[in-house]
Length: 235
Image 1 (cartoon, one colour):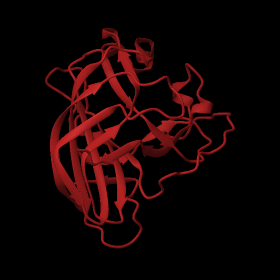
Image 2 (cartoon, one colour; image 1 turned 90 degrees about the vertical axis):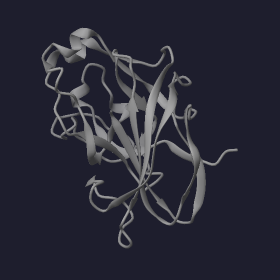
Image 3 (tube, helix red, strand yellow; image 1 turned 135 degrees about the vertical axis):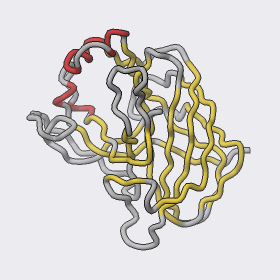
C-alpha cells in the first residue's frame, strides 16, 4: 500500500469531514517490467495523463506529534511509532480519474469523505494517505504538489551531474512538507514476499519541471516540497 504524507501546523482549532487532493497522472507498466533487470525497467514504464477511471481504497490516517515546543517543521525522516499519537484512521473509497490538462494549477479531483467530522486542536500533525487498487498495470498514482528548493545536482541521491539553471520556487507552506512511506520488506519477485509499509517516512521529492529531459530520469533534479491537500468541512 504506497503511502504519502503531509505535515501541517494547526494554529487554532477547526473542524472538517473531507480530505481533497488532485490526481496528476499515472505510471503504467507492461508485464515485462517485473522480470527485467532494474536498468531495463524504464523501457516498459509509461506516464499517462489520459486514462479510464478506476476505484481505489484510500486509508486516511491522522497523527498528532507529541512535540510541544521548538521548530514546528518535522524532521527530514521520522517514525510514527515514536513521538506521535494516531487520532483517526479510516478506509475510504475514492475514484482515480484524469484531471484537467497539465498546467500550473489543477482541481482537487480526489475527494475522500471521512464519514464523520474531525476536530483538530492546536498542534503539529501528519496526514497519511495509503492507496490500494486492483489494476495490475498501474505502478504509481501521482498526486499534485509543489516542489521548492535550490538543488543543482541530479539524481535521487544528489550525486549526478546536471547542467540546468532554473528559478527556484518559493515555499508557499514552510510549516509543513510532503513525505513518502518507506517499505519494510523488499520485493524480490517471490510471490510470498510482498512490499509492506510500516511507520517510517522520509522527505518526498519531485522533479524540477523546467530541468526535465526525457530519457534522463536518473539525472533529473529533485527538490522536496508539499502535497496539494485541503481539509474541508462540507454539509
